[in-house]
Amino acid sequence: MIISERVEGKLVKRNAELNSPVDRYDVIVVGLGTAGAIAAIAAAEQGLKVLGLERLSAMGGTGTVGAVIGYYFGNKGGLFEEIDEEVQRLAKLADYTKAAGVSADLKKIALEQRMVAAGVTICYSATVIGVYMQNNAVKGVRFIGANGISSAEGQVVIDCTGEAEVSSMAGVAFHKGRELDGKMQPFSNAIVWIENNAVKTFYTDSGYVDCEDSSSFSKQVIQSACCWTHQPDVFSEEPKFVKLAPLLGVREGKFIIGEQNVTFENFITGSLTEEPLFYAYSNLDNHGKDVAFESELQQDWIVGAGLWGVNFSVPIPLGALIPKEIDGLLVAGRSLGIDHDLAACVRMKRDMQKCGEAAAMAALLAIRHNVPLREVPYAELKELLMTTGCLQEANHVGLRYGVPSNDHHEPIRGWLTDEQAISSGLASEKPGIAIWSARNMGDAIRPQLRNWLASEDELHLQRHSAFALALLGDSSAIPVLRTIVQERDPFFPKSSRKYNQARGYAAIYLLGKLRDEEIVPELVNILHTREQFSNVSTDAEFINHDDEYYFQYFTFAVAALFRIAEQYPAHRSLIEREIRAVIDDPEFSLYITFKPSKDVLYNMAETIRSIAYSQFEAWQEKQQ
Image (tube, rainbow, N blue to C red; front, side, top):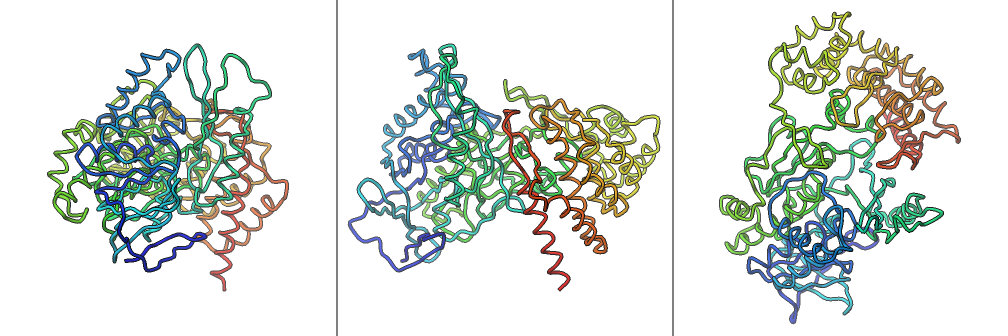
């Protein structure tokens, strides 16, 4: 047997034994946060002997210590709802804790009561520092706590640490962030206050953080706490400041390479599992503003079709919780086997609590049948999950327009297939569903799209037909798209409830996708004419001022130029020279705002420089 540890960021393995006396458990849950608290309770209530390790002094994670007390989508059903009902019961007994959501402090109490009643051995202030392994199987953990260094043996370890720290020590393979530069979604930092005798919370997206970089993480903790929205010059009695949440709201970290990996492309192509543990549900809720640097598929969805606000359900299989080629280990929470694009949907608190419950049930059956986790009988697992309500066929809702304030879901009755319906949609101010429907139909509707492209008296029909053709890779859309860019078309479709993209810079993305080299001079011109751009958006969450509006044109122009230069190397020298003329200036800056405050500014200059310099370096390497 060996023990595997991370020392100064590197994996170190050495021979070691789990010598007696050692505490032995059926299940060890590491991290009692959003997923882990539910996993520990669910496993113990099934009669398993469970150890719960938590580095903080409270459980519940983002929904308690992180003070994010509301739910943004996710599906109902399962053990977590019983906990939330108990929170509401407790809230009626204490008016001063009345909350606009699920009270964070009361949920900590409800979770602890349920966990103690189930017989979980809870160990706070405990950090795992090593993983015991035999061949490719996890056999236990080494951790440091109030008693110093201890060890525990478990038949199954459930890694709910958020950053998959146990899995890292076990040598699991990962990927992290978007493909272009590894960047992840912005994090948030919440504050708690009392207003009208009710506990309320407020959060501001506060920048970007890499939780595996201790220096970056510490810096962001301090900077986000010092934001003026959190630390005003004067504190008032109403609302009365209570506290700053001691846990950052991190939306994204790294993802395991699982036995099965669920991607946004799987959703788009309909190649999803038929053996789900639960159904995740939300829109592609990317909080980032630099959409121009996301994957082409995400931009097709959000920029080309404007479908940011369309919700969809995603079935999550057991294989997405099992690290590839590792036994005795499950991952529950936001580090499961998904990709960066889909993580914007599959990360909501309801669904991550379901993920913890599902992991517990899988562990139960693996122990009961003495089989590897990947061989757990699905039929039996499904029955268990349906009994608790974690898995419900009714949760597989397909596509919806959602309103998070009241959980109302307006159905989209599938993609359009009727040409007249698509024509009407393209001719409207809400063309998104029609654009994507045409993309799905492909060659069957291509001739008609080309006909509509000539409809100069119906501007929306013409221009949205060009968008649909561009998503099909059809170069006949190029002349219309060039006109849209040259006019700086200010029209913002209303396909989404928010985060709609202006037709002017959306057309830039599509011309880059089509590798149109004749648009290069126009895109270069955009790089040097910031003063031409005046904000016309009314979407206060996405674009708030002139600089932010220009940021979209600038970044989409840069990304399009890079795509064009990849196919036409002769343009590389010009493109590099013109981009450097702007970004090499020490005074270069482009500020964006973060949700939900329109007054918190973040300079994106270094992100742009980093991406550009990496591209220039790649070109130089190809020349050598």
